[in-house]
Amino acid sequence: MASVSSVIKKELYRIEIKSPSGNVVIADEPVSNGGKDAGFAPKELLCSALAACTSATVRMYADRKGWELEEVQVQINLEYITAESRTIINREIRFIGNLDDAQQSRLLAVANACPVHKILSNPIEINTAIV
Image (cartoon, rainbow, N blue to C red; front, side, top):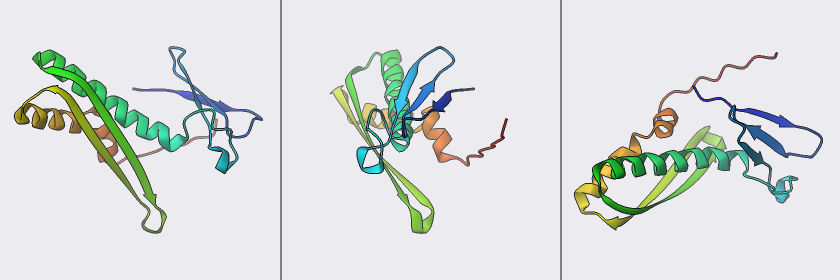
């Protein structure tokens, strides 16, 4: 199970997010939304999770296979269509290295099996309690 905590105080939209191990990420809103753009916007953090998981999963697989993958580049774009209450996530992946078509196809399948992709591709239930 993954876990984080967040706190926002008086500074508009500046949110400190902590992991149990002590890692800290700052989230904020862009200046155009009243923030100071001091960190990732919440939707950017969601995109970041998919990009990071994709990259790490592909890297681990290629390393296990001994493939000549030099670099993985991932671009994520998220669009929420309010009128349809629908989200579209577009992911572009570039595999840099000495890889044939079969290896690239396999790495794409591996990318589609990364844990965050699986989470975002399946029904999500959010339970909220006031404590």
